[in-house]
Length: 265
Image (tube, rainbow, N blue to C red; front, top):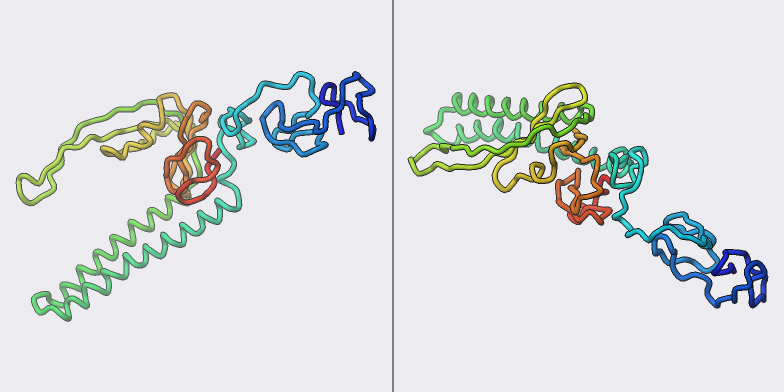
């Protein structure tokens, strides 16, 4: 047991502290004076924040999960890029996503490659040679698109700073009748990378997630394995986006409420 006043270790059976004379309590500490975490009986240090239980002048109480904390290297705080992108759990998720994407790619390639020739055999109005050619062209296009997407996911991470944001109203004619038109708003976020290149995030209408999340001057990191962005300073945010599934989460969350993957904090 330890003295609740000065932290001195008490002798077995002692009713008063031999150092400061304070009366012994039946239970020395209930919660940490620094972070509010419940303490185990006889603990000298808090297992949550590491502060000494017997400190005479404890640091101000901080709300767990909202402290701005941490150096960029630690990846445990809200200021600094997270190191969780390199955790075994996240790497495993990235590998699973890659396998799923490759499976979808081959499905999108083989469906038109097989489906159109089969349709040509079953439908008299469609010549077999023509259906075979159409299927081959579509399959080739899908293959190229998916290969480029997979190659993009293998590129290295990059970092940059948001330098500009703007929106523009656009008009789109979707073919067919004259009334099959629409007007939409396009939102663009411009990032200048450390290498001096310009990257843009283009979103439409209600899908303006990064446009609303990022501000001019924000430092960001792009994670190609998930095609998502991470903000360097999250200390003033109320939300954090999941880099795996892009779900918006309360900043207090440690895991995504939809996919249960670790949030990059």
